[in-house]
Length: 112
Length: 482
Image (cartoon, rainbow over all chains, first blue to last red; front, side, top):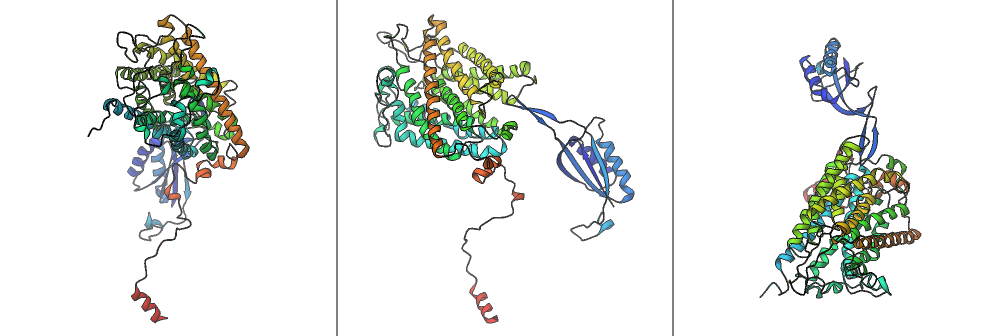
């Protein structure tokens, strides 16, 4: 089992969700986050004073899948989240030791 | 039975009470949510509580001695201006104030009031109350809360009463002084408080900010607002509340009140648009900003305040444009020079209230239109009450009179604010300690503006709750078991 974590632009979330679903995975988790990478922040002006805002809003998407599904889902996310402009985000894959579905107590692959 | 004495007009009384309530709404919730939304997230609660306590404190002072100091019999302190600078302190908590209102020094100079003294006292109270709330904007983010609770009553007594008496209570600056100059036929004109309220608030706030000291350096560097929609609510209440502010000051619900209302709205609309246009074409970022628009709005409201019922509507538009340009320049350029840069006037009250009030007050001396009738004469021996500025009266004297009154208010309010705070500073810390300032609302009040229920673990120190008596059968069962 693998955990796929994607940091994406918030406005691509709906496309990503749709792509993950089409790839055959039922369920993902999304959290709001603030981050920076090569994409620079922006300035905000309040009452005539300029403030630098270095962090930009990002969406963090997490999906746990079977090993053989990883490539498919990662490709789906990357395609859906890509705008070609700086700040599109990153996707990484990490191993998952074990998994339990809380409601039933099912473990690992059965819990996916 | 008759609900109305002969002298009382239900229409005038009703309008005066409605106007007063509109002005009251400008403070609560107007200023409370405007300032509460403009400050950093960690100061929203502190700001709102200072607004609510300030309003309450002024009302108590007002009925116990303040109203009469502003609008009562003159307290003769000496020659010249000292003869009519402040009224004798008297309370109005008795039953006498059911009688017809009268401002002793204006008796005979204006029509007889058509409502009771209580109406006049409450109407004038809401003006007295909003003034400290306005300069609260200069000192938020560091003033010791307890200092605020003592400073407001003292300031209201020693500064506001004098301002009000001098210009509205028939005091020295409201009088003609033809013995000094033959052109001095009218006193200084301040329709609704360009000087008494706004110039006073701008001056006092700036001096208080200087004496108390700045916010934390980190807070000054990151002074971003926490809730612009809440600021929009406050700003909107200010604008429409101003219909009572300026529309109530003729004291009668006649044609002059209507003119004052439309002039107020017109100057405000023009000033708001002027600021937005300046932001688009002349600001560093070349972008219109909402808070810029709000600044323009406040500038227009403040600048038309001394003029609302003296100028025609074209004059009102001129005041809107000129004041907005002046305050925009003051905000964006003067504000970046010493001493404005050094003194930490948190919300820039010295610009939007001080500079705008002064600009409006001087412009009355130019634009007051003698064809605008404040009170009608009888067509024979009593002439209409009007005012004429330079443009119409062809004499610049009124501008000098306006300037003289402005300088008086600036000097007195600066002096008294400085003195009160210096004296208080001998007994208590004017500025909250740094470790409290770092925490903000939580440090001062143990409250925060947007608490998160999911982060709350549970109640500490549960209050002693009466527990329901245990069923006797159970007790019995336990007893048997043991």
